[in-house]
Image 1 (cartoon, one colour):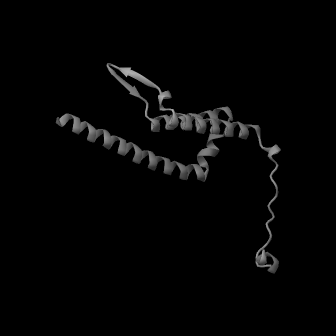
Image 2 (tube, helix red, strand yellow):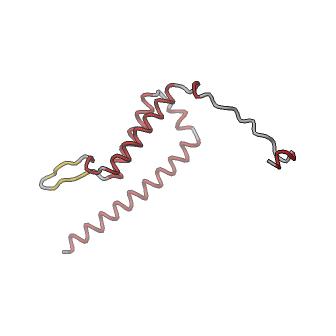
Image 3 (cartoon, helix red, strand yellow):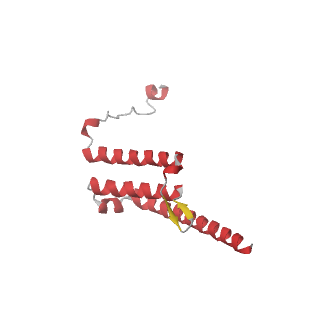
Length: 128
């Protein structure tokens, strides 16, 4: 406050945001995103609800990381389709470009470690 009184800084000219002016598609996209987050928390807590299938005698359950990827990519797809977003505007935005670099890096590391873990466990089981 002292800096403001002394004139060292300028007062903020922030205006109150009128949430009534928020477009309906924005509200829908937020609800879809929140539902996806709820499903992620639900699947993370109750792993028994993860899909599973039987191959031969073995029951295979979808892993949590794969379920999370499917949920979030599915939510993103639904948001783009339902809210009729302009995909060209999404792809050309700087947030998308830098975000995709991060996604590719993180998924690359995740897939690499998953593959390495499978390879190591395969070699351990074949040695015996």
